[in-house]
Length: 418
Image (cartoon, rainbow, N blue to C red; front, side):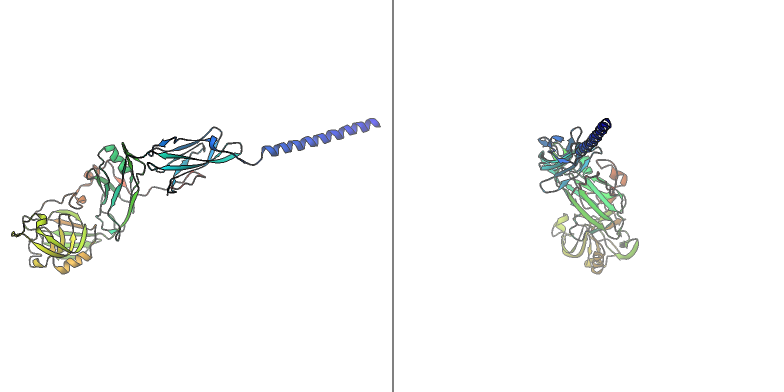
């Protein structure tokens, strides 16, 4: 009997030990799966920008073996966040947005050590100062109505000359044009500081256009970096085009293909023949003083003049207008007696003035004058063939104004560039 009790006691002890062992095992497991704890993330990451960084190159953040990045933010002194991209394995991150030259940036980094340790750290870097910054003045100036005719070119005036072909390519890459509807167009280097953009055909009526120069931080050439961003937005109005037939002595104006009016006119007489070709309206003046001395006519001579002219629509910088010429009404529709301008009655000139805008087209045909200059005396851009136009792009290719598709940021790393 006593033996049986002894055996039972041993079994009871064994069961108790087994239960305790089981409880101990459960307790150990809970400790191993404990929640994340805070650590110093500085030893887990490496910032590529030690000392001064080249603003034209991306800055990277990498995680040490076994660790991963959970968040990276690069912020400039103005509070603007620089866009960046996290690698799929979360082992590295790099800037994709522009960095400015000579600027201090703050980098905030969050990382995970792979053993439930998570933490943050802050670092910083500065970019090399640029010896020179290239900026761009964009045109047309849309501070007014912002609505232009279908012939209006876009213009870029650089702050300094760019001659090197590779540097010119960098300038073109920094220029972005989008429009709705999209068109095919191209850049033309007029000289070392000036570029023009035009579509292959005239802008479609009603088009909205956006132009931006965004070369911030980009290396253009040795010591020359892109400066501050500039942009403009404009809208194209109806298609208004006028044809001046110098032989028939009449101007025909159309809006969206429909003839609005045919007006008797006079154009340049022999020796002052009006230029042939396509011109673009440059501006309009309710009243303007015209003096023959400005085009080389000596005061007091047979051809001298000094007049206050009304309802003047300018088509060249040298002084060719479509304007009121009440003194020549008897010759309008009959013969050419002007010094190069297209003259018409005051009533017709006022109507023409009120039905045209900057960027509209005025084409002169059948004159004995020279051809309109492509550049330098207004916008003769449309007198250049499309094949010749594209040859004067540094990149040597046409440009589509389709807006690029938006790229989704990496998961957990939404860092829009402001």
